[in-house]
Amino acid sequence: VTKLGPSVGGLAEGDIVTCGPWASVSNYPASALCRFTSPPTDPATALAEPVACVVGALYSYDITPGDRVLLLGAGFMGLLNVQGVAHSPVKQLVVVDVKPENLELAARFGATEVLQAGTTEADERLGEIRQDPFDLVIEAADVEATLQQAGALTRPGGRLAIFAWHHHPRTVDFGLWHVRGLRVLNSSPQISRDRNVSNMKRAVDLIERGVFDLALLVTHRHRICEAQEAMELAAERPRGYVKGVFLFD
Image 1 (cartoon, rainbow, N blue to C red):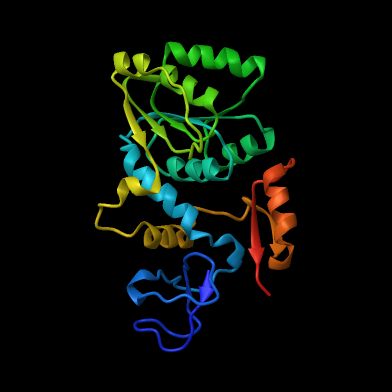
Image 2: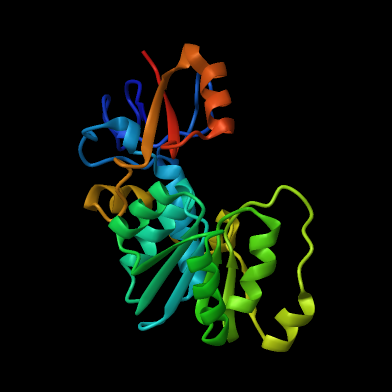
């Protein structure tokens, strides 16, 4: 979030707008900026770009009223997915993650059931799910084992959405995906680029409406001079860490 300089067409000095990559000076056409209708109470929680990624993914999920949805991975982006899917007309939203505190947030945001990965109870429940797989499975964990598991949890003809950004090659069971006739979705921000809408503008609107609420997700704040410490903490992800942000003096 940034403040405009003087005299920007269609906008006024002091308006709060979304911004692009970090730079000392940014030069954008006014049409590329998305304005908050009123200054955010807490600018640190007005992170429109990650919400815009989820807005685009929600388009790709093609949710039908009454769908049963399974979300694997409840990190920062996974929890934004929870908020978005919970506002859709789904019958069931089950969330799986290793961190109990993140699962508590998922339940608070609208998950109908949460499972702590690696526990006996979760293993037994996932075994049951394999016998009654889901219409839509969203993989948001960025873990190869989770990606391999996801296909078996998706019903024949269902949708497997790969939301996580996997930075390394992965091995998956294409035979299973083929036999089940899964619709495998690469639910990255680029999947909706041909739609004649602005995901960023819609993200701002939905943040202001309260559909997406980052107040409980921004857990750590850092001054820009503390960049090294902030990056180390983000890599470590200690208990209670969901998202860190930089604040500029």
